[in-house]
Length: 249
Image (cartoon, rainbow, N blue to C red; front, side, top):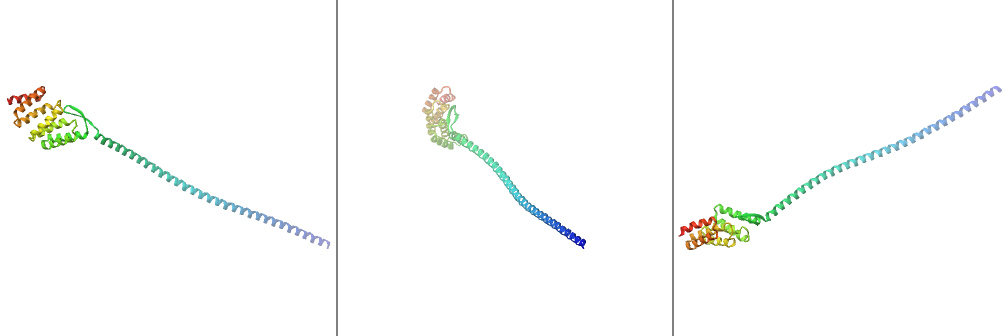
């Protein structure tokens, strides 16, 4: 009996011991599970945090990429604008150069030029030369009445011109050609008065005599021819004057 009681107590003690070990094991297991769950929770939180950070980083990278593309576009646009500005500046410089050249050319049209007519050198406005040449061209074309009008207009517009003696000479010739002998004599005499040393002065004197002959003023013509021979003895007009004097006697 005593042995049985001892065996029973021993068995109960062993069961109690085993039950305590199991509880400790369960507690430890629970602790481990709780630790693992806590660790998993931390890991999950960390993963979620990392995922959020990664998403933010991606958004940041996208924003940065967008900014880079925008900067590239701005750079390309600015480069294009710079090239256009360079072209505009070049075109403006060319236009300024053309304008300057045009102004210079227009100014040169009004600047006096040096001309030589009938052995005389003088300064004249381009308009004077143009009008004189135009009137002379009309005379040489045989339009004597028109050329007379042109030379008369020239003398009215440019009374002090260096062309004036020559213009008056050709005006006299145009009048002679249209049988306006008195008008021609007046212009030839005016030329001789204004420029007695002119290269065409002997011709003008001879033309006066020719007009006087046409007007039947023989005595006056003879005196004009004699004066011509005395004033311009070495001229070709003097040779012609001597010949005509011989015919008038």
